[in-house]
Length: 141
Image (cartoon, rainbow, N blue to C red; front, top):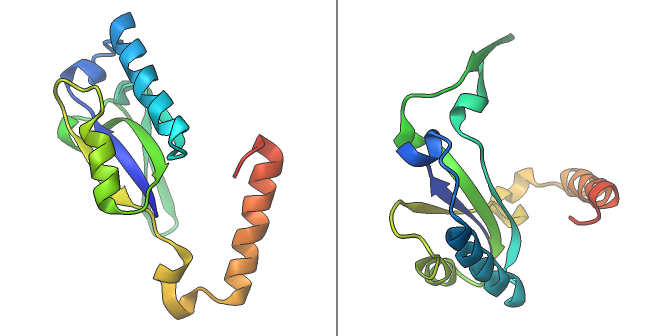
């Protein structure tokens, strides 16, 4: 099962406060544990929402809204993608994360089987083609 581990933003991350060397080293050690366990697929920190934009969709109209965005509790500061055997395993990993405050939201990623009959052989073939193309462009799926 794949999970997205969403690090919630706070006043510091939205103000662009960067982690200390010690915090970076602690996070690096945690990431090493995830990699060595074969769990980590990806992980990144994000710039504050002041550097971001949102695109609102209304029929054929597209509206670009510049950041910053006011609802800090709804924003994210970073994420991991992991492969775990269960939601409980994902929870146990994140209990070990070197955070002293804040929140991490854990969300399971849809699998092909979750789509039922809508996931036809044609859709599966398209998905496989795209994953192969991505792997060829970036060296990993």
